[in-house]
Length: 74
Image 1: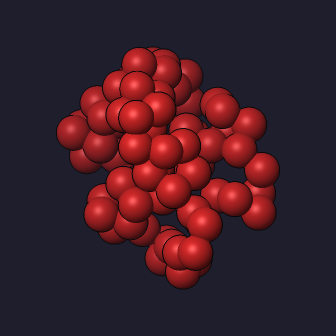
Image 2: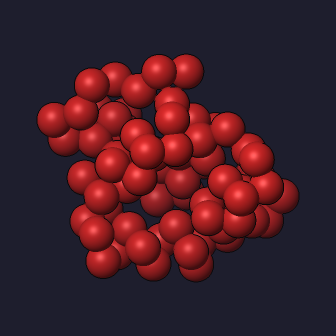
């Protein structure tokens, strides 16, 4: 998953406004207690950040690729 695909999926699944909040403010324990923004800045793969964010927010599996988006690449 590319970083651009990560941000498209965030917008599609969470919406632009809430997506901005959730990626900045939610602590992802599986990523060393970082936010999604901090994890990406630290060089953690976008796919791993996306999975951790979805897990933390209980996003159903069928919505994890974003509405209308192609399945992200690994």
